Length: 212
Image (tube, rainbow, N blue to C red; front, top):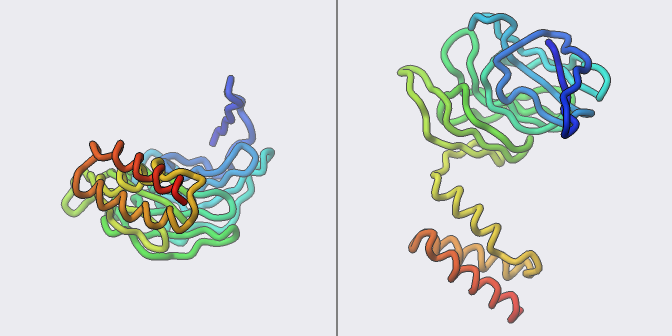
């Protein structure tokens, strides 16, 4: 239940959690003055999972509304006011359940497509991804990625790269109309010709901005 905060130079022990737990993975979210932690397991065995949720105000932890489904090794994103808890393990098979935190309680929302635990994750309470991890029934190591906007959707690695590249290439000063048009053009070019087309796409984007 020990908690430590980092100030950029050193770690300092602060107030302990009310419920000791491990297997959190994505469970802790937020900052050193406004954090939230949820789920985990209370012993080293895999049968003592918890749904306890606690918030930290920079001084002490306070228990708030529990998860509807206890779990550990889950994916998560967000902060005290808005968070997502995705999949994970509990006293049974790996699960697909997803819950959304609104600052006061958890509500079950659309499940992930592929059951998984021990995964990579990140994002906010409204824009989050989960990637990799382990599935079950049968057991397997995963390579798939799912993203949440209003529901989890499986995306390919190339799709994630295209989105990131497009966001980097479109000039920030471009008008909304130019941005919408150029995003569509960039995605088509990248899909057809691959990453070597980046230089061409960037030149076209800047040319369009100047004409605008």
